[in-house]
Length: 138
Picture (cartoon, rainbow, N blue to C red):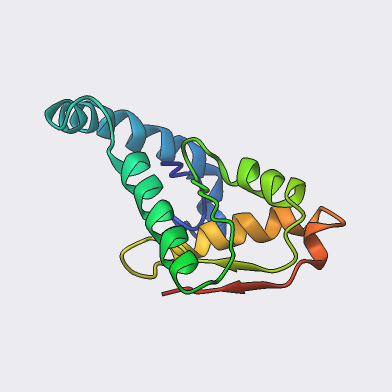
């Protein structure tokens, strides 16, 4: 996790210069415990596998209702990154997009930062910036 992001840790303007060093300190302190936790569940996060299964189930549910749709997985800190999903959406010529974050609840540091990242990618692209996007925030 990138603790330097202001969505995660908000320091007063006077102390913003400490943002990156604080983020690095937190990351260093958390790393051993995170490594131990991942080792206990088989060496890595099951998040990607679970997310892919959810995406597949969503696509099947939509097909059952005769709603043709592509489903894309985008992750903030691992593959496939949000940028990769955005490029695939563009390559596929998608004309409408529904964004469904799969966080268990709304938080500015999760859903909020993910939606903001997607908006930043889209605003700088002539095709994606015109794409109608609906966001299901929670």
